[in-house]
Image 1 (cartoon, rainbow, N blue to C red):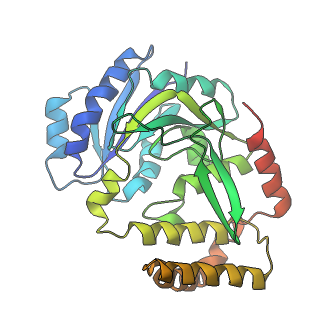
Image 2: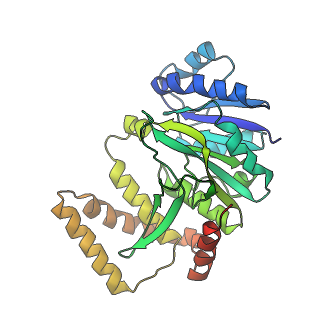
Length: 307
């Protein structure tokens, strides 16, 4: 059996950990092998670490050298010795049996990551599924197929509740700083794993409940939509092939800009030019990320294959 560490990212999140830690400790106790539980604390200014040590003595609180958001996982992976890291946001609660369905897939040497099924906080709605890549109106996007609740391949596993092969994670260099501080980093990570011939799996028998965007909204100052758009653009410019001519792309962009104005929003007008200027400054250092049509089609074909 593979050795396992459940790692929970935290920053001033005691109000979330109060719900999560009892469920994770119960799950670790139920798991048939030793399973370490650690909280990776991004230098909280509150008393989170002292509270964890007092209320949950079986949980090891580890303070990151700096608050690097989820990129602190890159540092933690180097410090741990377990075979598998289960990465969790703190704004979750987990099913008592959520660990074993994730870990069973790592009996195959080509598995990179496995993602759980998530429900909204009240349990009324499934909010995850296998992720699929789409190309519409000149842009790439990805969506969870929430109607498909069967074990299968997925474009990416959600960074908020996924298990990864620690050695493969390190070999890939962990999360890519191009996408700091957040969003699309899990898409990029898993796509790079697919390029290596490693597989990413969606496993609905592993269940979590998620307060969607609760952790980020605590600290984001309302900048969520702009950051999402910025990293979505960086993902397609850095990685995916161009599939339409320049004129067609410009027409699609014009429609998106006009449509955003019609909706009373300015996020496209503010974000697109700034992101494009930034990309032109840094693009040379990320040339290694670009794939061609043939390679992308091969990867998408492999994803479509059932596990």
